[in-house]
Length: 99
Image (cartoon, rainbow, N blue to C red; front, side):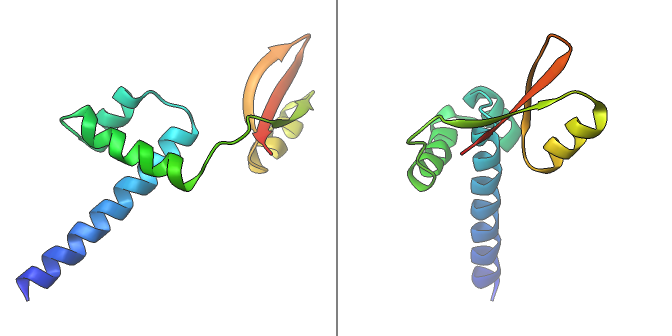
């Protein structure tokens, strides 16, 4: 009984760690920050999750859909649609989202 509960906890931990590392890698955060966030003592453990993420979600292209926001309401709408803020230029805000 204890072994079965321990197995369930281990599987749950592994899935949660993989999901967290996927989110972190998709946001292009450095592996060392990912390692600290996941509580790994060795970068080798973190690289396993990063490689799993790359195998599952291959990034064949770095093409983006670009949008412009001229005010707060437009920016809010773009963020709700999954766009990420890139920069300000000539008083407008630029957002992008992977195709």
